[in-house]
Amino acid sequence: MSRLLIIAAIAASYYVFAILLNSVGTVILQSITSFEVSKPQASTLEGFKDLSIAIVSFLVASFIPRVGYKLALLCGLGLVAVLCAITPGIAEFWSVKLLFAGVGTAFALVKVSVYAIIGQLSPDTRSHSSLMNVIEGIFMLGVLSGYWVFAAFIDEANPASLSWLNVYYLLAAVVAVTFILVLIAPVEKPRAEPAKAMLEFVTMLKMVYQPLVLIFILSVFLYVLIEQGIGSWLPTFNREVLGLPVNVSVQITSIFAVSLAIGRLAAGAVLARMNWYPFLMLCLIAMGATMLLSLPLAQHVGDTPIASWLDAPLAAFLVPLIGLTMAPIYPVINSVMLSSLPKSQHAPMTGLIVVFSALGGTTGSIVTGLIFDAMGGQQAFYLLLVPIALIMVTLFFFRRSSLQVKAKGELA
Image (cartoon, rainbow, N blue to C red; front, side, top):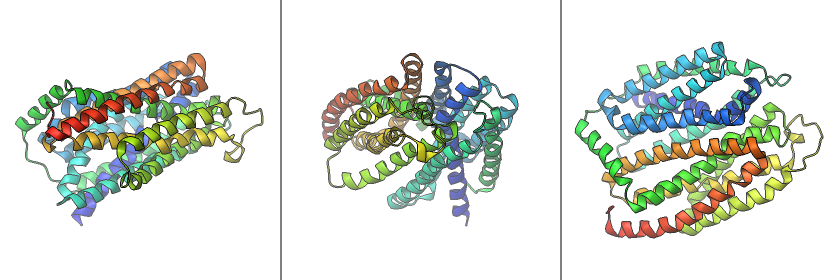
């Protein structure tokens, strides 16, 4: 019974953060409409979220065991509950920035704690993998439901209305319930190992200078740049380029999240029979082809009023399907990198993955927003073909370096 209570607590924590973290594209669209901010200004929301995750993960992740995972979870949930509760009352763009900074800070605490608690609950590799998949599946469920939850609070008759901010009252209530669930869950406090924590922090810094690691983090950076460039701006693309109503623009973006989920599930079956390198090259080629085939369809969508999904142009369904071939890249390169290293180096490498993923996400959102503002949505998405081509180059060198390191058993 106590084990089920702990699982329920960490699953609920992950679910609500999935909604909050992946709402940034919707909030960017609504901030442009409701607060009349420019696209470059709106794009900074991604930075407030991702840089908070990066900074907190970099500085405190190794020290969370000293205070306990339960306390870290409660601090993160408490911070977000307060911010969600006060944001609608302030109803200013700066308060939304503060909210995302708080969400990023809290998620860094929550993710480290959840992953560690999964380890406490799992006596062997099989049970660990099973529970991890359940938790990550619940996270994806939160991503999908988030688009529909936010869309339900958007005023179709007056998209500029601030009524969409009321969604945060609902989320504050959900976070508060999750806080109580974590509070009563019998999560064990780990034995503090400050010396080990400091050693992992120093090791993480030293690893950055290794050639394989540099190639790898560049690949991670470029991938997340593409994913967040599309994910953060797809609702705005649907609204301004395709002419969809605001609520439909948000709802139809859920196709992108579904595509990512299906793509990662399907990749598992394919990779059981195919080497990762040619598979990812095919994925990258397919990504480019999807962009080149779907974006021209967005150029002349006509002047017919669009009231629902049934009226949406073909491009609205094709563009988010890039998620199918994009999905496998991130988990596969992470897996290849970690499997090339001894287990003693996995923790510091995970820290680097979190940091450079966050930096890539921020850069992708800001750059795409600047180009969207200056040249339009189609051109902004077309230019994402550049990092797609660059990943093909980095993966060539990554494959060669990883084989060398794997043969040696450790980084030089």
